[in-house]
Amino acid sequence: MRNFSNDLSALALNTATLGHNLDGHGAKWPVERVIDACAERGLGGIVFWRREIGDRAAEIGDRVRAAGMRVEGLCRTPYLVGSQAPAAVVDAAQQAIDMAADLGAPVLTIVTGGTEPGTKGVIETQKILAERVATLAPYAANRGVSLALEPLNPMFGGNRTCLMTVRDAVAVCERVGAPNVGIAVDVYHVWWDTTLAESLCAAGPERILGYHLCDWLEDTSDMLLDRGMMGDGVADLRAIRTAVEAAGYRGPCEVEIFSAADWWRRDPNEVLDAIVERFRTVC
Image 1 (cartoon, rainbow, N blue to C red):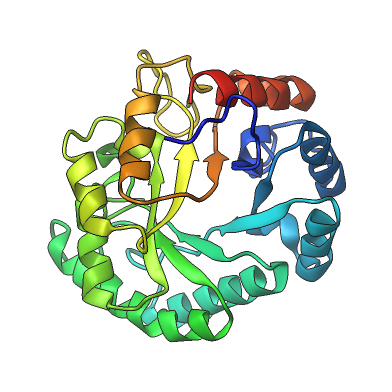
Image 2 (spheres, rainbow, N blue to C red; image 1 turned 90 degrees about the vertical axis):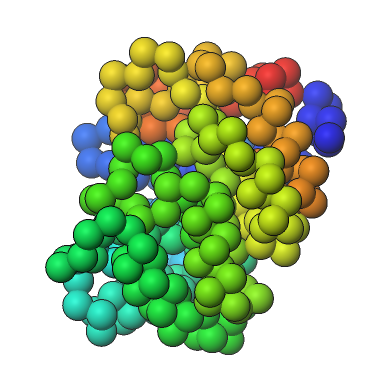
């Protein structure tokens, strides 16, 4: 397992951790200030959300690289299943792919969306998801972008996701069969899964495109907006990273914390300093 005690090159900030991805939250630092603050602390990379980018993708990507960091990814596609008409889904997702390419982000995260109208359970929706991802994969490949399917905690089943385990996400990847389609592994969503290590090994290093850090608070008060800072909860962070790296992953560790009642109310400098300290000591 990699030693992060004196090496922050693998540490990446998902800007949602500062609350900027939702109206009414966070200190609303401009993108430039976030980039500079990360660079000052020696972080290796940043992951942005589409709402922050607008028509400045190339400019922002260049700013990150000029600061000595990498753009590690972009969050996220619109939901691919569960709501819009197929043509609208593909068009909106292609726009997200274009933004990722212009930003220089190698990975675009997919949060799938929930159960397709007129269906029950998740099997049929997963088939539809695979068909739509297969349609998008060549377009993304031509733009140098990989697509990372992110399974979510089962409590989000029905409205936000049809993938609730790494195993299911890997099965969709295999159904698609494209080399630029893989998975993103988020501690918040997989910490409970006792089959995680086996599922990751089945995925293999070529399918694992991202690893997201946070913690699961024992008495979480909001299923979406009450994630914990690493070390404050009950997730076995070292065991999870051991499993991810045993499967061959050597990419960035992306801190993504939605915390409306706690961390989003703090000074971003305090949040970033805590991220660095926890990454070195508990991750």
